[in-house]
Length: 165
Image (cartoon, rainbow, N blue to C red; front, side, top):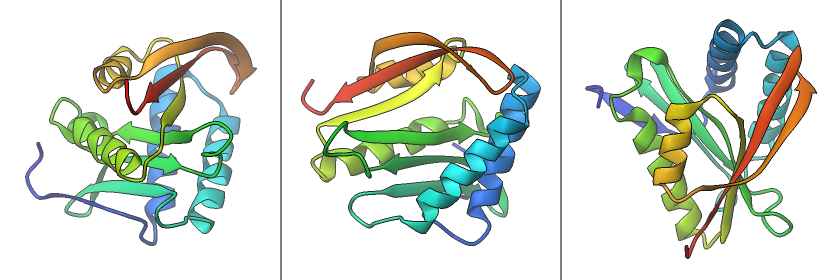
């Protein structure tokens, strides 16, 4: 793991760091258009404005003043659907250094400690390293579908993790 890494919750500027990281990675690597960046910004801002302790979680990994990664747990639909894992990303220079594993483990520890039975996430086919992390943490693919968004057709995938198996 990166030396000096600290993981904390929301702080001023965190939303923009997370948006910038998502926009750069998914724009450069996957060709997502501006609508993706706009959606991440709008949804993440709305989430940050309504963060509720014990229900929601935002974790931001920083290495000094450098953004290393993030993950969130959105509990707003916990009763109907389960809690949603969102905005999980690790900057390229921090990949394969334990940052992603730590963020995911901390997020799932929060979910288990809060008694959430189901954690789910939407992703898309092709993010093989992330999928391997999800599956090693107990997530299972439950749905796959094509969605027209962000400038193309995306092969979306829904993963779920049940607390007791």
